[in-house]
Every structure is written in C-alpha cells, then in structure tokens.
Amino acid sequence: MTFLKSVGIWLVVFGIVFGFWQSGVVGVVFDSVLGGNSNTVPIVAAPTQNIPVSTSGYASPTNAMMRTASPTPTEAGYYDREYTWKYKGTTWYYSISIPKSTYNYYRNLDHTSRDYSKYGSDEYTKKYLGNLAKMFKDKGREYGYSDSENVMNAVAFVQSLPYTSDKVTTGYDEYPRYPIETLVDNGGDCEDTAIFTAALLRQMGYGVVLINPPGHMAVGVKGGENVHGTYYNYNGVKYFYLETTSSGWDIGQMPSEYKNTKVKIIPI
Image (cartoon, rainbow, N blue to C red):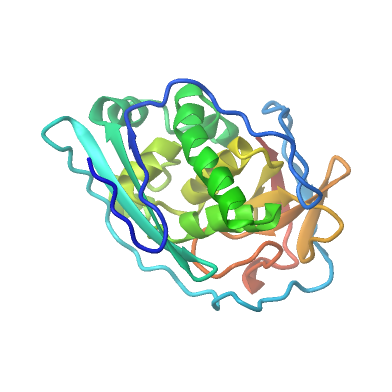
C-alpha cells in the first residue's frame, strides 16, 4: 500500500500490532497515571470552576451530524477505515485496516455491563490504541507540541468522528462500544467516544477518568496548575472536563446544560 501525503500524514496499520508501547513520564501539564482501580465505586461530585479557559485559535463548538455506520469488509476480510481531522492549521490523515474477525470478536462480547472501565482495558485494545498513541506522541515531538497540544490533537481526532445513536446503528437503546468497534463503525455516541478517548489518552500516558453527568458521558483529564476551566476533585486530583462528541471543545470547557449538575466520576 502506498503512502499518500498532504499536509499531515497517512499511517497504515495492518491487523493487530504485536507488542505494547508504553509512553514515558509526561510533562508538567498532565501527570502520568499508570495505575487505577476499576473496582472503585464511582463518586458523585459537584464541579469547580477555575479561571475560564481561552478559546483563541479554536472553532466554536458545533453539533455533529448523525450518521448510520454500516461496516463493509474488504475481500481480504479487513475493514479499511480512513479518518481526516484538522488541528493547529494542519490536516491530518489516519488509515487503519482491522480484521473482520477482530471486529466480530468485540461485537460478540457482552455489551450490557455498565462497568465502563472494562471497555477499553483489554490487551487487544491496548495494542491497537498503543500504535495510535505512539503516532500522536511521535508526531507531537516532530511538530514541537506541548503535552496539552498532544492531548488536543488526539481529542480533535476523536471529536471529528460522526455522532451515531445506538438505537439507529445497533437497534439497542444503550450499546457501549469497545474502541475497536468505534473505529470500524466510524463513530458512536457520547459514551463510545468518551471510552475511546479515555483509553487512547491512557495509552499516551495521561491520567484520565470518565465523567458521567445525567444522560451524558465525557472524560476527565488530570491537569496541572496551569490548566484552567471546569474540573472535579477525585482522590485529591483535579480532573478537567473534556467533551468528546463534537468539535471545538477545549479542555475545561463544559456545555452549559451540564454545569451545576451532580456527576459520577468513574475511574478506569
């Protein structure tokens, strides 16, 4: 397969990437968290509003269009997917080929559990997302990105995925997707993109939790003193709110409908 070039990159991944890449210690903006306890009972917390984050250089948040996902395998038994997003004036491209058998494996797993930590923590998911995480870290060094810029480039990728409702795409009212399903289905709803984002950022070495306002799901990113916006204290750590379902949201920016509401903090 040839590499196509524009302003940005094409990356092609065939099958499962064997071997697990582990990022190193991150900088002062976000601290590395490699532990976690999925058995911890989610806590309920009220948000703390810090100094408003600047929106300079970011597009205004817009509603993502709903699109039905209908994966089609190639003759070789792979799902080929290509993604395009923009960050800091650069158009990025990413391409992946996932075996049909891998996708079907995840489709056949249990999707009734509301232990959301399980959906992004298995070894196959880590191997797929580990390669994607390595790309973001490597390209971040090449472009001279800071830790926060590395995070926001990865977030811009996820935010570019179309919003797809569970009812339309799966026939179920609630169907949490595993990250491999989100890649093949080319999107998902709020819980799917939040799970995907949290799993990806964790592979990049950043501390994350899931934030569950009423009827919604987002990500909390562990931040340092120079990160501003809405955050939640969990076990003595500040986790800044991160919206994943549409483009333009920065770390610490929270949709108005979820402000001043009680949320569940779900460790992963």
